[in-house]
Length: 348
Ligand code: TXA
Ligand code: MG
Image 1: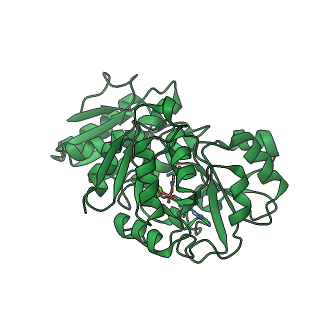
Image 2: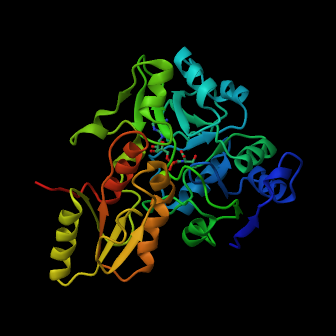
């Protein structure tokens, strides 16, 4: 399959019918799959009403069929077509954070949605992305768009069109290239099918931001301690992993250097994922900076690109700094520890 790439660098004109967006929307209406930027990561979109279209997403990604997809809408009024029994607190969050990086899990309504989208569950994940290209594409396609992150299953999510191209060229109909995404980690997934909402995946909207609007919010036990099955099927898989194994290290710079030295003394080539502040303080075979410790959103924005860069380097292991688990740091550490298969070393 020939994968078409449309570069959209003129966001000002998106409100009128932009030819690239129209072509991509036409393909979506024909039940083809097209990747597009959102404010979090690139999504791989397909018509959420069509089994045929949605099946193509799972095929292109190599995604397990028991992992449901998020449905993207471009207008709040479309929510009623696919979800029901929406609690008041969900509306409060929608008013505050949509469009934005917040996915709400709600009871599914009617028979229009493909059952493959929801992997047979009676709930559906819905979000309205805060990106002009995503919004105008969904509006023009005129159907809700099912879209997981546009990476091969298990790999870091794509934050640039080139990441999508690398993983999916030849497997999908097109890529709308709108440059680098902003937030860099995926949306927060919040289960709103219960009396007290529960975070199933930390992401771009923090627990603190949710609680500021609606009070108590729980965190899925599986995210806090091992031995619990996650409520979000996607959280049980190894994810975000570069080719080399990843180890996350918490401690002083001296301790980090000791861990690097130990692996080098075993004959391994060591890559280090670090921050601007520490990039000149450490010695290793490859050092890749990823944002600034003083600005955690900058780390989130560059995290997946940083992890992907190691795949081009000749290294045997990746040692990563760790980050405070507060604000967007919660999502950063969740993704890093998943990439590391929970290989986490602390300084004693
Ligand atoms: O930022 C994002 O959310 C990006 C962009 C493209 O919108 N999308 C994304 O999709 O990250 P994906 O498929 O990579 O992750 C969706 C997560 C998975 O962990 C999945 O299991 C969970 O949401 N999910 C979807 N529907 C669900 C449902 N009905 N119940 C529980 N979890 C659900
Ligand atoms: Mg994903």
